[in-house]
Each structure stands twice: as C-alpha cells, then as structure tokens.
Length: 422
Ligand code: GDP
Ligand code: IMO
Ligand code: MG
View: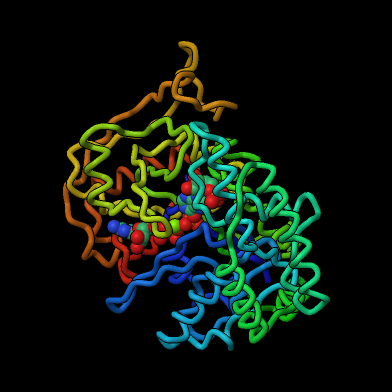
C-alpha cells in the first residue's frame, strides 16, 4: 500500500481540511506531518463548522486512526483546547488519535520569542501567527528542543533548562518576560497529554503499510510558505512540500503514491511578503467578501488576487503533484471575466519559470482574460451540470498545468464537492 499526500500549492488556506475530511473514508490512517497551531483547517458538514489546528482532519469520519507525526510542533495548551472541544462534540479522540514521541513541544517562552523576534524585525516583520512556530523549529534544528517523549524522561529538569535558556535570550533582547500563568496552564496541559496514546509513530505507520493499510498525509500551510522553496524569508519554518511528509512521518520516498495538490480558483495570502497577482482594487475586495477571506486562526484579512499559474506550475514540480483539486470556484460564479497569470515580465523579458525573487518591483504579471461562467454552481452535485464556460476554464487550467483536476469544490460544505470522472 502507498501513502498519498494532500498539500497546499499556494500560500495556505486552500481548503485542505475540507478535502481531507471528504477523502478520509478511502483511507485507514490520516496523518499530519508538519506545522502546528499556525494552521487552521475548516470543515463544514451537517450545518456545523469546525476549525482544526493540530489535530488531523480525519477525526470526523468512521474511526480512522489519526496521527500527529514527528514533524509537527505542538502547543499543549492549544492542543488541549482543541481536543476537549472535539470530545464535547462527540468525537472519541482518545480512541482515534495517536501522537508521535518525536513531536517538538511549543513552550510558553517560544511564543514570547516569536513576538519578540517580530518586534525586533520592525517594518520587515513576517506577520507570523504568533504561535511560537519559528522559535520551536529553530530549537529543533539547533538541537535544543524538547520533545513529547521527553515527558516520560526527567521532564521537569529538561523543561526548566529550556525555559531558562529562553528567558536569557528574551532578556538579551531587552524583554522582561512574564509567563507564570501561561506556565501553569502549560504544565497542566502536559498532564492532559499523558492521557493520550503517545507512540513511536514511524514504526506504527510502517507496520500499517506492511499490513496493507492506506495512509493519507495532510499538509499544513502551502508550498509558497515552504522554508526552502517559498517566498523566503516570508515563509513558515517547516517543509510544507511533499518531501516534508517523508521526514515528518518516517515514510520512505518510494512509498509515496498519489500527490494531491490543492489550490483556489484565485489566490490569497495572509501575513507579509510578496504576492505578484495581489489585487488592491474593488475586485480584490469583492473576492475577499464573497470568499469570506479572513484567517481561520487570527481572523486577519487575507490578501486576495488572481490565480498565479507560474507559481502553481512551480509548486506542482516541487511536489510531484499528479492530481489537482480546485477549490472555491463558486466565489467567481458571478464574475464577467476571470484573469490568470501565465507568465511574469522581468526586465522586459517574459519569464515562465518561477524566479528567485518575486518582489513587486522586480516582476510584472502577464495575464490572460477568460470569460466567466455567470452561473450559481453551489447547488450542483455532478459535473454533468457544469456550464460549458466553466468546463472551458477547467480545460484551460489543465492544459497550462499539465495535470488533471480530479476534484472541484463549489462551497464549504462536505456535500459541495464534485469528483470528476472524465
Ligand atoms: P485550509 O487551511 O487549507 O484547511 O483552509 P481554511 O480552512 O483555512 O480556509 C478555507 C476556507 O474556505 C474555509 O472557511 C472553508 O470553509 C472554505 N471553503 C472550503 N472550500 C470551499 C469552497 O469550495 N467554496 C467556498 N465558498 N468556501 C470553501
Ligand atoms: P493553513 O494550514 C495561511 C503564514 C503566516 C505568516 C507566515 C509565517 O491553515 O493553510 P508562522 O506562524 O508559521 O511562523 O507564520 O506563514 N501562515 C499561514 N498562512 N495558512 C496557514 O496555515 C498558515 N500558517 C502560517 O500568516 O505569513
Ligand atoms: Mg487555514
């Protein structure tokens, strides 16, 4: 059996949570492999809406095992809030969820460091989610991190050493940290975590594969936020790409099967950093309003713009995407015309390969204009109902991206998902 991966091809918030939930019935195991509570994955079904941050989006289906893998960074306090809310709503989380011993823990002082780093950057700040993601991954790579499995091995001493190190760092930045309450809550949440199944998840997943079980990996963030290939330094601190699933779960590259790449029919970004196709006009505002483009975690306004095929092709290449999923086309249902960026102009030359820098002053997007389909598609339930103009739009994208679009999402609800057969 192979491991399939579903990941975002843009700057996050493509709709990963929704589609993971829809695909889950075809799998035995769903696993998160990177990121942490910077993610906000929204699911809607039966008139209810859920936002997941650290817990995989497979927990609402039929008893699949859900794993938080070693590549994830976990905030015990936020995990507890999320887990308790899910249990209240009827999910038997203690039964379906397993956590890797190698997960790195986000400490209260990591969050303070995240805020202090942003303050220190001044005008060049990244606009992080403030969840301590960068400092936690920094500690992991600099070999100072604290892992979930450490709670079984002389934990207090290890925690205090890490905390004191952070306090010294904060003081050297001119900060006087105060975290007594946060620390108390955090230590209580560590005890709550002890009630879960904390395992060697790399062994578990590989045993599952040996037994013929199937695994779906759920990416967080998106390829343009990848620490190596995204719009650095305005990125997150993990590998959001397909290779991240191998490192973040202990799955060998040759076990990867389908790679689902998910994108919106337009493009959004939250936080700072370059965004070549960003719209500052009424159309951008209209997309934001119709698409409810406000952050699931921070509530921040998402910046909106046209679809960027140069960036999408790059993301498809880096991830080895063989199946595309298009989200939120319904947001464009009323548009007369839709634009797609097919190239960049750099120093007067047309460039179709994603360049080193996409800063606004260095590139100009080249657009083609396509006719809108001008049809409310939100109640459609099969592709036979698609208007011709919409089918033409899909064909245009498939030709440009040289990859089939296998699923089209026409609304936030589970039911508003159409699997293409053609
Ligand atoms: P994720 O982080 O990739 O899981 O995406 P988010 O949950 O942050 O953002 C996607 C938002 O779009 C959520 O509010 C979803 O409920 C919503 N959504 C998902 N698919 C569709 C769709 O096809 N149409 C519309 N209108 N909304 C959608
Ligand atoms: P999901 O999984 C959109 C962005 C932040 C910021 C940058 C770095 O819901 O798609 P960080 O806190 O990670 O250090 O912030 O990355 N960012 C996201 N944007 N969706 C996300 O996750 C994001 N996670 C981080 O806004 O620009
Ligand atoms: Mg999100």
